Image 1 (cartoon, rainbow over the protein chains, first blue to last red):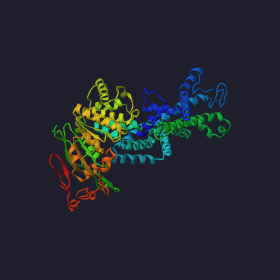
Image 2 (cartoon, rainbow over the protein chains, first blue to last red):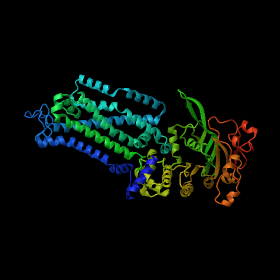
Image 3 (cartoon, each protein chain N blue to C red):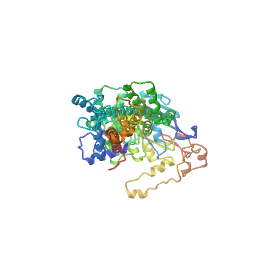
Image 4 (cartoon, rainbow over the protein chains, first blue to last red):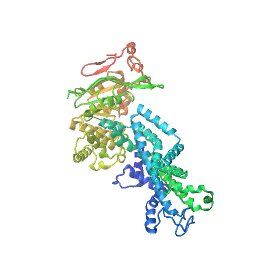
Length: 314
Length: 323
């Protein structure tokens, strides 16, 4: 951390920032991130996707009168036209609208699943790293056990259970989020634990001890904030993989079920040979959306990691 | 002046070295072994010795960052050696510590104001408005501006950070401060400033210091009495003038002969005692005097019996078979 501070200090001077500016650690990171073009491309692509997912369906509904469930019987499996810019699916629903609505679901799944894993991962990692010894041993063995679970078969099993219990499609999506979240906190817990193990020995923690701070305050005020850098990077990259997991699950018909669309589920139609060959408008747009979003997240995450890396010298 | 504020009696800190599958304790690293001394109210006790001799461990054990293995730490008449964290809370307000590395001792994610004010929050010493005032006052007291409160540590130089560290230690209005090599990480020109500031604070606030360092001339300047440590043991303790003019222990003599003199002619005349041999490992150290393998005056008795830490008159203590 000492290195980070020295380095960022130099950086600030190089940038010729005004002396009166208070450079909080986050501001320094923002400065650096802005200079990374690829990361900014990622960020703007991601923002574009998010805006599209939030406002797209509203505009479609109130301006054009098209909802994701509305069936246009005259245009079933129609190719792109002026009325339906991306065509319609096999029951005559507008693909653009469904795409935007699917974006809502896919992005929500990504964000919520990652939030769950970040909360569990950082708390468990924090406790494990701070107390060390026996507590650490037990928690880390638990993490090992969790890591041994084969991710996909388990997801499939849980999804199958959901199908069996006839969970309402409306609520199914929440279960998918929770399942993905609960299965993916282990990596983060390890990262946080490792960082805290080294932070714990720093002199500012000795000072905190000498001041008589309680354990909880030490963990949440001093240790975890100092691991935020790696938590954020790992969370950002985690959103991408959560979206992919959801897509894969939905593609297999076990995630989000109709009438609710998600990108993965929309790609599913490509399993039909005829659709695959002749009705490209049904599966290319959602595929492109998944690709763009995940790539944007990864680019942004990489940029964020570089901006936060203390050893990076430019 | 002569009322003891802190009495250390036979303080021991052993670190277990664990081995094997079941973490069996195979050996002990005796970082602090049977150290006794007193610190009077309002004085500064210097503690010197080469790296690894246990001076930092000693300081940290006194403030209970490490649990002492054995011995007594009597602060103002109360033995706090066995106190739990909860019982210690009261004493955390009385004893504070200044750390060695100004880069590692401040949380990089907190503003300077929060770093200083944290102790006030934890001990619930005052309301938000008084807290602000107190932070401003402390910043000014250590030679920084009030506006610095909203800044982050990375914007400051080493010397300024050390001042922040001192302000943090002062926030709880302590009586006793352990200075753990507070100046060894600083530039020479800054060292003098910080030491002078520590002296000013001492006279203004009536503080008592335990000053740990390895810079002998700086220790002489600030301390009333000086203790010399070697391999976990206190080998000599005396009034600082007495120690520097009449060192008794062979190790102290060698240490003092190593102080550079800023005059080439004088320096050429001076005879430097160069110690032979290596410091033995503090893990299961050999019996007898720990200095015997490097001592010019070593006698057979030195390997058999451990020298007693005895008073040579006038508060000059030494642990050596020569006397």
